[in-house]
Amino acid sequence: MISRSFVVIALACLFAGCQSYAPKPLDDAAHAREWAGRDVGGQSVREFAAALARRDKQVRAYNPADGLDLAEAEVVALFFNARLRTARLQAGAALAGAQNAGEWENPELNISAGLILDSIANPWMASAGLEFTIPISGRKGVEKDLAFAQHRAKWREVIALEWQVIGELRALWRERAATSEAVALLTEHVAALEDVGKRAADLAKAGELPRTDARVFEIELLLSRIELAEQQALGREQEIAILGLLGLAPRAPVKLNAALGAALTGGAIKDAPRLNVLRAEYEVAEQNLRLEIRKQYPDLRIGPGYDIDEGQSTISLGFGIPIPIINLNREGIARARGEREASRAAYEGEVEAITVEAEIARKRLERVRASRKVVEEQLAPLVDLQVKEASDRAKAGDFDALVMLEALKSRREGKEKVLQTKLEEAQAIDALNALMGPTFAPEEEKK
Image 1 (cartoon, rainbow, N blue to C red):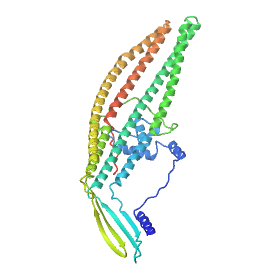
Image 2: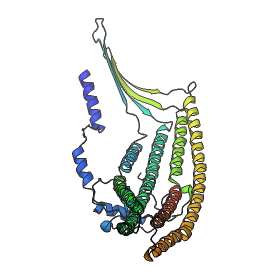
Image 3: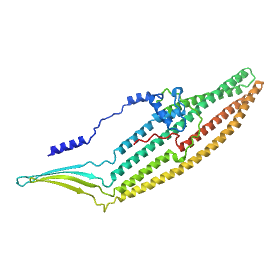
Image 4: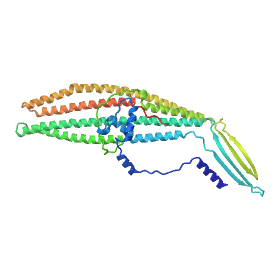
């Protein structure tokens, strides 16, 4: 009898489509080859870029042959970024679970045997039963709805993470562009110091200028060269950080065409990805409460049975159903109601927070734009005029080392101030865009 029961169980597993386990160990070498071989001009990336462009409200071209601009870098990040790949796989796992949720429970096979110790003609007793649970409570359907709500929440998290990664990329992109412009300004400043410093050194040799006056140019030139080298090294670090965010290896042969320009993309607070995540989480709380309420109601248990006792065979059919008069799942329902209210509060609180953040971002943008206007229209022309007048005096034979040096330093500082206000304006625009959400519609949700 025992051997037959094992045969029955084995056959049941076979016909039920039991799956087998196969190990899949990590392969660092294969991953390193794949990472190093990622191609921003590959066919799969281009197809992804074309699909993204079709669901974007703004024009989005993709041609990485001449390097990546910001819009093209965003495509690469969305395609290769490691966090996004992980989040999408996790959402896929939630979807796979949802697609298989709400199934009926497996039937239960019960077998027992006994031997009557008294001396009788047929001392054997045996019984076998097969019990099924019929979900008349409707709980299984709600379990499936809950699983799909959890998947939708995971998918909204993917969309929010996509926008977060783009925000991080834009921040790094602006900083890299600002560093590039700072290098250009320092290079110009070093060249001017070299030119004027050479003239000061010649005058000092001729005895027409004190050696101490000529030395101030040497000191400023050395300090500027040190700063220039630091800025160039910083730029290389920033490029590696950008490549990492794009999902590319540090030595990937990709040119980054970083620029400071930014534009408002429009949008509304109601479309913010953070709010969409909380809306999806509220739906999960709704479905969870619905499930806990369903758990008040019992499911029917039914099953045929076969008995043999002293040679007499009996076939039976049994029914069973819990009587919900004591445990009405009060704890589960109360907890689920509280979680739903907490989820509602979290959503409403986030609406308030984003509204405040958006207003602050608008005011900040107004402030930095006003500052940039003053710097560009008033300060920059003034320092340029100071350098011109000092140069004209020097050409006329009135070379004042300290005046010339201060003029050059003032011009550099003025241009750096212009650069700083341009960076702050771009950052303020990016911050406001980040609150409103992307211009492109999310990928169609899989079901």
